[in-house]
Image 1 (cartoon, rainbow, N blue to C red):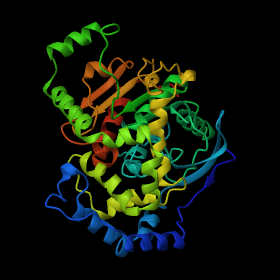
Image 2: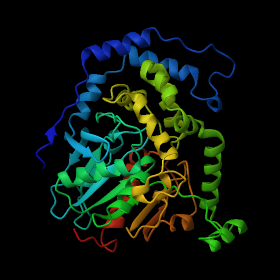
Image 3: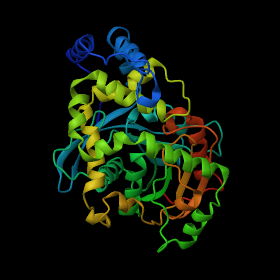
Length: 407
């Protein structure tokens, strides 16, 4: 490993824990109405009160911290061209004991973190079947998330996130590797394939973001869309996408336009942070039975993050306001580059309660699809909600009869 890489252990100071509890003890909650607990209006009052009280009086962060510290954590520094010198990056690096294992970069999204990888780590790094592929897994906290550093300049876009992840893999000695991601992880890993196609051998995603087909570039797909020639699962996916755009995407508009304003609430108020994240965990999963401990573990990673929870919002602004000339952005923001065709082999796992679910044919405009599976259960947080399904897809994609890699 590179000389900058050092073992790391999470150790939230006692004073930080006490400050959190003090703030929770002074929390002011909204007044109660007949519909205070209606999910259509947002996070329910009773749920947030219960969780806040448990966070203050019962939740054992030290126990959670000890469990997380059983994983192989590391920190390193990475220079980001034109932006940061020696940016501190936290990551998990779990190697497989099996020879010929495949290096895999796992990229989280928002409101996730490295914690999304914890259930799939043991499944990816070992297997009782000789024919199953195994992986050396690298799961960073993206800049502005978890225990990585805060960025200091505007314009830290997809190309910069991709640069950080790629340079991390090179520091670890992985010249060639595969990627896996959803949400922001989809966009980052797409950009990695676009910028570093000689290094990214294949990419697997559990969310596909791409605009509707254009009559100029995909006339047959436009005709298919107008005629409604989709499978039942694709039609349900388009309905789910419509629900998200109409009823579930207000947070995105706020974070994409004025991220610093809600940032004051997330930085100062643990109750605001709790409600902001908890709503997404509920609405974006497929009836996953979130325990109070799980919810508070996810939220606590944000509350105790090195960059501060408000920093995680800024990427939404950067993705929608600047042109990423280095990656061939087209004027509709840096995200447009992620929609370009790349020759990197692509695998897709689709879960019915994700947020943006586009038809199979739309996803095939992104690159050569070598694996695709539409599941009947699961949501946005696939690695955490349905780890066995996601790992099964990765094993199938990279196993016998799947994509051939030349490591």
